[in-house]
Image 1 (cartoon, one colour):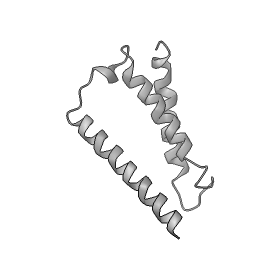
Image 2 (cartoon, rainbow, N blue to C red):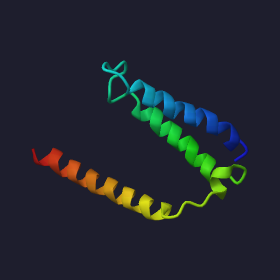
Image 3 (cartoon, rainbow, N blue to C red):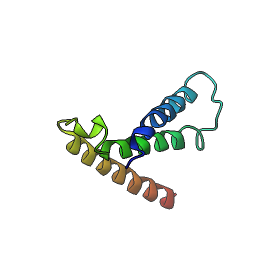
Length: 90
């Protein structure tokens, strides 16, 4: 976990760059392979930083974060089931 402080700036940079790619009238990168992997990598880097005891992200308590995380994961699972059902029934 000694690399966690060094992951914070690149993680934020990846997220900002991915959001920048999605702006504008014309997409410079195709949507399926475009900014989604960049956002995922950036969020993964921020997650590593959040569990590192050396950074401030671990020390900040966010009320209700566990509730929102469980609701988001439940919504993801429901969407996954619906998409799987719809793709196989058509």
